[in-house]
Image (cartoon, rainbow, N blue to C red; front, side, top):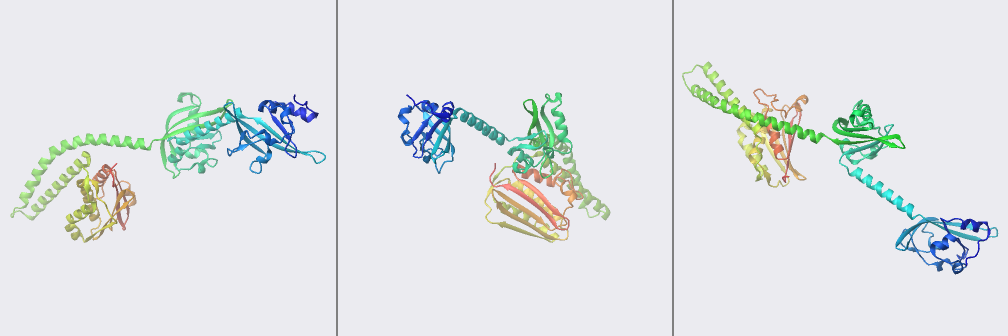
Length: 480
């Protein structure tokens, strides 16, 4: 039989059905155990009273997975006064919230109150909440779409990595520091909020698939596809979550598709026009050349025939450029030595360089390995760029080609010391039919860009008036 409780303190401990209490004296002997303790751990009062706490065994595991008993010295100094312990019983793992309290009596006596609460259910619920929270956080961060959550005052609460990639910010730069309206052009955020409440846009509190623009950190505007939802808590509106997708790649593909459709139509027209015009041009040019060789012609007539012949050649070149521009034949790549091709093109143009007083330089930095490219197409690119450089240096100068490997790309920089290009013309250089040269077709650089793009490469031009021009080409050494 258990000893009946004595005093108010003992009766108080026995009334606590959810707390398992054990009282130890200064020698760590058991002086009291409440009813809940005895029932939960399967002890009898007469078996444990007055015994050292070590005799009760070590049924628990601490946070470091080491066995722990009912004695406080096993918890100190490595454990705080309150900690979590686990215990395996009946093939189940139970979790306890353990607390140690040191009590002092009036005559210097001291006791230790060891109390435990079974928090298994609460701990499992908290673990599930933590797991769900972690899962949601990982799902939000793993999304390629941008996700922004803000409260009703516009303060950003969640800003995922997808939003960072689209808008150019890090979460640390945004959360708690930037209002959500800063990510949109003027009045766009207000319009979006109005549409969220518009029942015609998917229902009140819902905005579906709305095309608009967001503002990048650098100030540029990014086309996006936006969906948004109002967030509620206890029937109160507490925030807005916005999901948005970057439309830049989609717009680029749409533009490319439209361009290819137009080129296909234009190609058919050019093929027909070339067929109808080229034969008469050849006839006109041939007769003009024959007449120009006659010795009895007046000088004035000879100049006119020479002009006819020049114009026929110009029209033939225009038709050839148009055919190249619209045909867009895929490259026939074979392994080749690009520096050798550059030297070959330079030799072809050597007489033109000497006529203009242009000195050619080629610098190949490091080992340039052979790689696959279409030698005919790249030769055409080099010829066009060398001719452009030549025409920009009527008084002579230097034409320099630098070639070097950067990571998995070959980078060519073709630099002249010519008169340069005004800033207002730079952004139009690759626009079809835009030209600053008298008699030019405006297709040379456009064709170059097309041929380089077919090699999965890039081409760009930098220039300054009276300082020269540099055309940079990046070609992958390994085809995708």
